[in-house]
Image 1: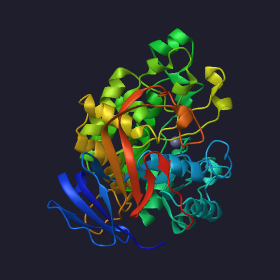
Image 2 (image 1 turned 90 degrees about the vertical axis):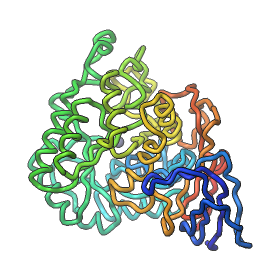
Image 3 (image 1 turned 180 degrees about the vertical axis):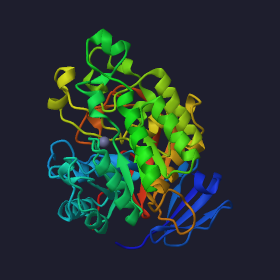
Image 4 (image 1 turned 120 degrees about the vertical axis):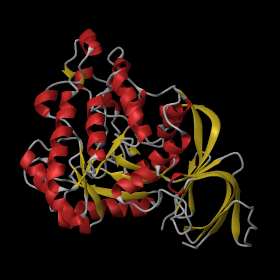
Length: 436
Ligand SMILES: [Zn+2]
């Protein structure tokens, strides 16, 4: 690939890590940020010039929680279609969950996904390895080998590690690699056969509920284990006020815990299940207004570090069934920015904080490159048209799946361009694949 020089002119640069919010010129050379200037820059003769006036120039978004479904469920998503969906949503890097078929608990699967990501050549794809072999919750996977293969965290996402002793050993062992252990917090003895939040709506619909304790009790357990092991814990998709309270307190005491929340959990309440809408079925389930407000507050005050989508593609067959037979999960990459900006407009978050939650926060949580736009940083950049209104149309997603509760929703703010390593990978509704 030939080195490129790009000058992004007069955009509003928001770089929360360095306290930048103002009109700047950004010069990109050889895949990294070469200069950020308040004064207009002269374009070098070889530069591609982009007029970014009226647009926001942001650090590329990083999603810590994405299901790409390959290998094994390519009918739902592939590394390629998931990468297209990512860059269309402004994400320049994603962390691929290991619950593929086969599970990513080995170097072989890690190498396979990496090769597919290289072939796709769109966003950066980081890997999450399994905590336990086959996600069975019994024997530990070979953590050292997974780290050597490039895994940036380990998780049994989709399933909790019910065995506390095993969880303790995983946290302990991971300290050798300074590796975050990402946890899907659910005590299966409390969630049981539940299919949605336990409350008025589940009673009205006659569906079995999942009490908040299913999540909160596991967060409590893992924070106790974290304190003993002095490891790193990352709590996935926080949904409950009780979890927020525990994480806030643990952070205050200096434990190395980070957390993420999804746009659906800070946007929708359990009532969204309405009349058995399977697109509102996810795990953890949508909670109450009070929980939504608590999650929003945690996003604003730094208790939660990152907005992550838990992008979980499913086919029509998994969703066009009775509610209690439907699969959990929604796609999220292409709606995350719009939903985040909606929360900003509603006053839940400042714009700077929202940008941080999509870039700097996730980068720091997992120690990933990017997430900021200082000189020398990778030129992973998301250019946003802030005032464009659009309607979510699931049939037009780049993702191979359509399972979203947001179809038909009006959103404001759209991705105009996505740059990865100084290369334009998405512009005006088109992805730009290049075979490398
Ligand atoms: Zn997940």
